[in-house]
Image (cartoon, rainbow, N blue to C red; front, side):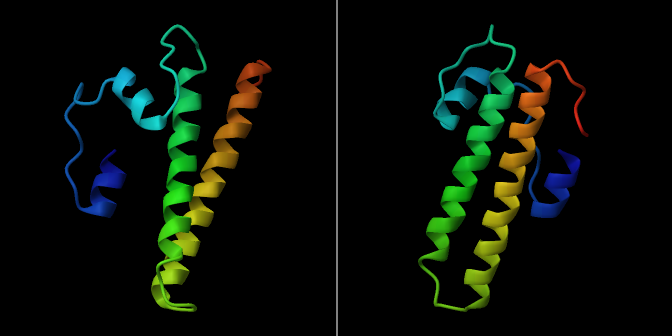
Length: 100
């Protein structure tokens, strides 16, 4: 959280400010607190949402502009996060250790 706060020049949320139930609503997935993979599914949904957002923003930029390139790079980074989380979820489901 401190890394993200420094990178984006914002204060981290206070503990308990965002409940898991509320996060699930924002992620667009059912809140299943008894499902052990719930946090993985929420994280993947948030990353997919970020990919969609950056792709949409890209469409509002002039072709070949620095802004369009930035949104392309951000979307690619978020796609990488989706792939990483999906891999970690699959490994976890198979009882394998995480890669990270």
